[in-house]
Length: 189
Ligand code: 5GP
Picture 1 (tube, rainbow, N blue to C red):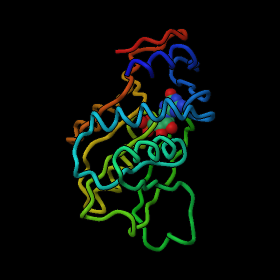
Picture 2: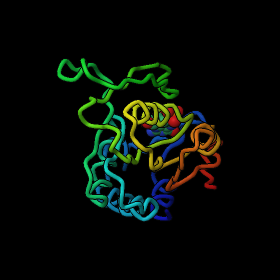
Picture 3: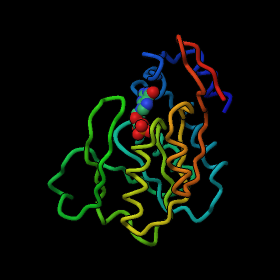
Picture 4: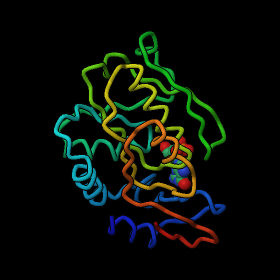
């Protein structure tokens, strides 16, 4: 997606050759017009009319998923990272290791909001080592839901997330794939 790639080149900052900071349009301040274009693009590349839900993970995925969901006409369900007394008795859970934060945490979704009649599209801001996306796939599988695919805004192609997901037979579509970002030089695939 050219508009997104241009925005990354103009505004993103590379940290330690591995982490891309996009706080100025995606992860802290949010450019809603850009998110609208992102939502339209996800609709175009995931044309299946049978998608029933968009599944994401808090917190960065929520805004992207909500705007995208308007183009699909379906609800968003987000996996929670914190325990919540309201839902904790009846949840699907999975463990996710965050490579950016260096911690493993539990994510959970209430059994009320995803089930075997669902055909879910998983959306997230980044794909790196695939742990967040795999955690969401694990939850969808526990619910008996069909996984339509994984839609990612920015994939870091030099990490192995895509291979892990595709090895499980999951379709992955990313709007921008960064092949390398050595010395602050961002190169797309
Ligand atoms: P994975 O689980 O695929 O290793 O990493 C994806 C998750 O980690 C995303 O939900 C995202 O929030 C975070 N993440 C991974 N790499 C980056 C990065 O380079 N920049 C930012 N801003 N977040 C990242």
